[in-house]
Length: 159
Image (cartoon, rainbow, N blue to C red; front, side):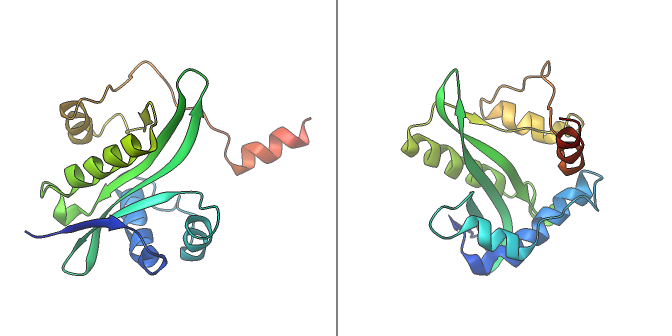
């Protein structure tokens, strides 16, 4: 199978959003996606893009994405966060995931970052195995913490 890994374009965002929704369904959160195609276009392109996205294209169709953004670690300095590495259900096991991760690692190396961070849901053993085979450390003793929009609003209301 022939595929291309490339930097995303604004015109890719409808297909990118489709994959994001596919991941949400896979992770048993089908109604959790609030981002729109317009959000992705506005946030990912222009003078100060909020993210960098690679796409895996097969026969002119986007079958995978890797979306990253910059972070800063008080321990390491510049790092990037891999928000999602998504391969469509039909294309899993085809090498697209490896090719996308390879591209992210090369991108990080070129940026001079000291670490790439990402999360994986604890029941997704195939993904955990994949990442560990690539040399990633899965830190099972850390919990993800976040304030969602409601939590932020409640927090502010209680200040």
